[in-house]
Length: 84
Image (tube, rainbow, N blue to C red; front, top):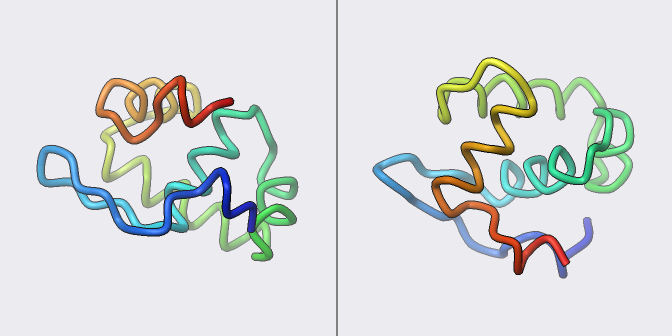
């Protein structure tokens, strides 16, 4: 896991709590990575990454990966600062 890119604690915004691993998946999505690439980055299986993506769809009420990333920025889970 790329510790410099992922937050070490859970974050809550507007009563939605995202875990550290969910934030790491969001970072991968924001970087334009595929599930296999995210999985390699965070030492999980691609199936596990897909599970987290589906969970994020529900939590952030999104219908696509692009919408997940947009909502993450809107709600403060990702910031331009965390993208550097």
